Amino acid sequence: MIILGIETSFDETCVSLYDTQKGLIDNIQYSQKIHNYYGGVVPELASRYHILKLKKIITELFLKSLLKYNDINCIAYTAGPGLIGSLMIGAVVGKSLAYTLKIPSIAINHIEGHLLSPMIGKNKPTFPFIALIVSGGHTQLILAKGIGLYKILGDCIDDAAGEAFDKIAKLLGLDYPGGKMLEKLAKFGTSGNYFFPRPMLKTPGLEFSFSGLKTHVTKIINNKNCNEQKKADIALAFEDAIIDTLVLKSQRALNITGYNKLIIAGGVSSNKSLRLKMQKMVDKINCKLVYAKKEFCTDNSVMIAYAGIFRFNYNINDNLSILVKPKWSIEETNLVQDIHK
Ligand code: KG4
Ligand code: ZN
Image 1 (cartoon, rainbow, N blue to C red):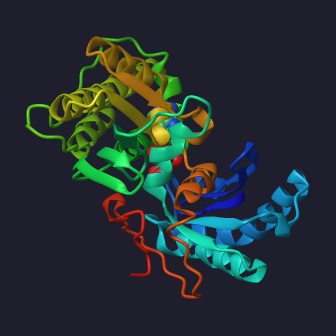
Image 2 (tube, rainbow, N blue to C red; image 1 turned 90 degrees about the vertical axis):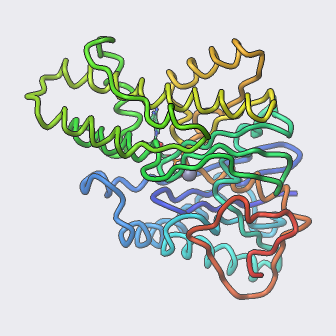
């Protein structure tokens, strides 16, 4: 079976073709650079750029892969969570194309896409496991027993980890999205020159909060006349504070549940220090860590196509109504649950 995946939930316009026998056929991604100018994603512009680019990259994808439209069996598109306008573009294009080709379309939950992304490749983790989803919009610890069997153990009560990375990066004069740039800058930092609090560690449970840390670091940046070295020191101390918090809360989730497998996914999971510190932690308590290839950590359509494979037999909706869910929780993705109900 060949499946076309479409991802337009935020600021990346992505399409891919995935073959259930042979794996990934091809993948095209257009990153909307326009948002750099504003230092964050402007929803209206994101939708407009999806409209401009989506049809173009679908055509390009088929040309590149030497496949014909009639070769595909199904279309999977992100139906939430995300920006409503952006989601609508992917959903309208996905459903219309599927209708024209007389093939099924499947609405995919973006967070489930991230959660399954470490399975794209050879060493697939098997259920059950604990998943830490760390992206620009989410910081969640999820107990995953199988496809559609998810329980959120801990959520973020304010800014997500990636959002905090982006905001501090902006204050340090880095481009949007700032996580990756901040990681690069932190490499030049000297450890020990700054120390920032690890939020919510003294609070029992698995909730996250990064807004206080962000405000604390913001005040320090604003009060200092920061030269390049000070900026790098602050970036390193900030990165350490976020990572230590993520590692300790993940360890707590493994301890509480007794599970021995942790997967990390989402844009922030591509951070090298996070991977190293997380690996150290799981080794210490005899658990296993799995993460996705770097290109599948940040938003991509391969994870959407991949999630579509699991849902192909259950979640097909052939009626013509188009529904997206900007606040769709992964807990509301029972395998046989229809988004339209
Ligand atoms: O998963 P993703 O592409 O989009 C959402 O679903 O939100 O995650 C994007 C987030 C951004 O906030 C970005 O700054 C962050 O992931 N990010 C990183 C790194 N690469 C991307 N944060 C820290 N270190 C990185 N290397
Ligand atoms: Zn994402």
